[in-house]
Length: 236
Picture 1 (tube, rainbow, N blue to C red):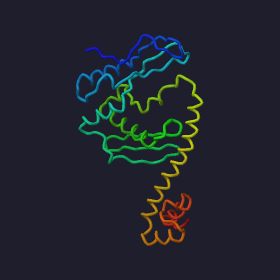
Picture 2 (cartoon, rainbow, N blue to C red):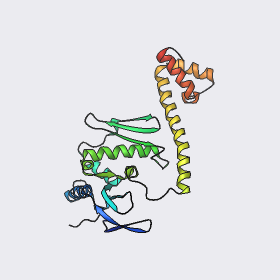
Picture 3 (cartoon, rainbow, N blue to C red):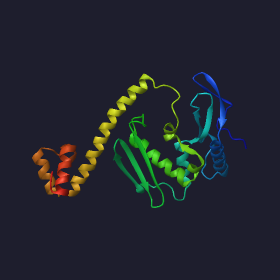
Picture 4 (cartoon, helix red, strand yellow):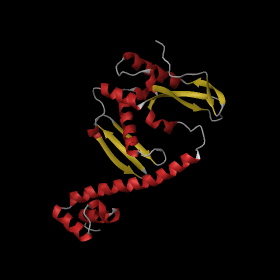
């Protein structure tokens, strides 16, 4: 059976036709994808894959360097895995400017991260989760070891072909402000949860009444941190 992932002899870049070099890594990923498709183990088709391309630094050639699998393809694989992705092994945290989902089932440790620099959409929680999910699935199915990557992280390992448009730059600026708000919001929620664990219900009510608030989240990140520190370390 002939499989078609869209290979061409030349690829058009900025109106210029560049000859294609098929790298050994692409041949390995292609062979693995075909093996998985023909096994019918995961219900995958040619349409679940497309080519990862990178141009030479001097712009004279286009390289096929691997295959990208759709998130939907990863969902198909997970449904067929005996030991697939399980949300109970997932943990979420912030590290500097990055939102990170950590997966650790005792056998496999993997992460999915996004930041204002590598996530251009307005759904960072969903994107970080998808990256973690797909990486876990590709590792468990062994596809990751054959140069096959998930679509949700494709922009991280290829250089953009075109200059950013004014609209893209504006979106990135808006997302930077959104990220700052999201990080503060998540930190407040985490601190509020810790506040509720450290203080009794009676203590919480007394503090909130004195501050004229109804929820711990309303106290604010600075004052919440002071109350948490006081319980943990005896000082605000």
